[in-house]
Amino acid sequence: GKSYFEIDNSTVICETYPMIGFYSEGELVVKNNGVLVSAGEVHIGANANSFGTLTVADGGSFTSSRVHFNLSSVTGRGIVNLKNGGVITADHFYRTTAGQATVNFDGGKYVKSAVKYADVNIIPANGVNVTVSANGGTIDNGSNPATIPCTITGDGGITFEGSGTTTISANQGYTGTTTVSEGTTLSVGGGIV
Image 1 (cartoon, rainbow, N blue to C red):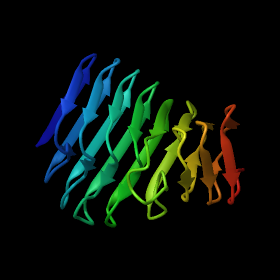
Image 2 (image 1 turned 180 degrees about the vertical axis):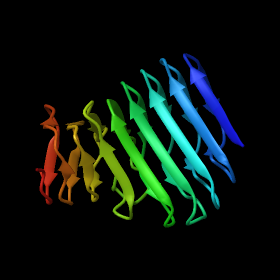
Image 3 (image 1 turned 90 degrees about the vertical axis):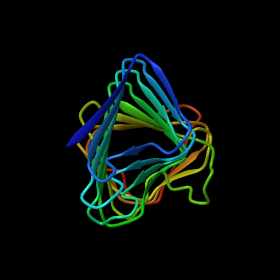
């Protein structure tokens, strides 16, 4: 069966590694100014044939050391939805196996936390699918060095924020506007069309 957990206008502190979709289907929703702070990384779609969805929406916020897809299985699937002012703060998104991993921007925001791991890639080049809807999305480097080595697709635009340098090293496929906020350095090695 599917498990569902919702944090609605409340605060939850998790002192361990939350797992969403652990040998099953699971969904975690943080919304309406709800807050979830995790002491460790979150695991989404963590095992064989598991499916996990994390949605942060409507002013909700989620903080974790990193968002880790498909912990130990090529058949695990994970989705992150950033909607309507929802914010995820984490060092980066990470995928360990060939399972499916997707990040959807739909009016939400990702903020890079201090570099905890050696990799400055916000999203790995190894197959995390990133889409941006017409509502757009925001990527804030959090004053840290950040690299985007993958292609972002969709019909929305991306706003880049933060006083650090964000490097785009892959050609981009989203069709909306690219906005670079004051104080942000955007280094483009790939193309933004």
